[in-house]
Image (cartoon, helix red, strand yellow):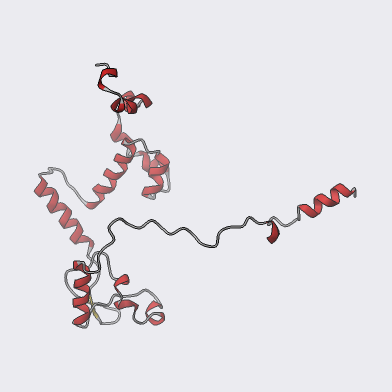
Length: 192
């Protein structure tokens, strides 16, 4: 074997992984996530509601699997509470403990239906309508069909293609890059 081939062999080991000394050094810390501009204050109504439940001897939530044994006090911790808690306490069928569970989906459906009636919407409206509206608006704003497919969680793009029939704008849907510049031009440069 010629010396150049032996040297190449040493530089490129058979293993697909590089030796530790050749690996790119990565920082050990990650940048902190951007904070929300308005973090929830500790005295929010929901947290006061939770504190009241704790004072009454309630305020715990069901923790899945072995978390209850691993973290015995976590079920009463504010971080584990439901984002949308139910109005009333109910008895947990597994343990018999009285707890505040999450808001039932029927409550949300009824609230959306009532809001649609109050707004005078003559068509049938449900929370699922927001999903369709979200997809349609994304497509109207020029988002790629694959992006919308991934956001909606569709396995097949044919399912997402259903939303394109609503658009049916033909050639009018095509926007020129110059159309985006028009609002920034002075009034004297616009033709009309």
